[in-house]
Image (cartoon, rainbow, N blue to C red):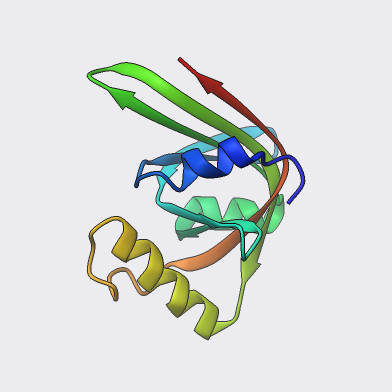
Length: 130
């Protein structure tokens, strides 16, 4: 996966932190928090989403993710990713991702079945540690 260093991958898999997904259509940005999963074996970052984010991705697949860990309000590290998103229509892949991501964040594995699976291929990524 181009642009994702070993250090960025290690940070993204270290613990369940929130990501902020930025989409844009007609020069109107939209940013919202999402749960995510990254695994080298799949070579993509996966998010589950609905609503405006999903509509925007279908119209314009260029996205950004900002992922940061804080302790007591102090930034410890951040990873910023620019990439291209694809809505996955395979039901089995969506169910697998739903179980995996929900488990990671401590939710029921079958929660939010209406979410759609989006895979993000990384174009570039930057890492900052504080």
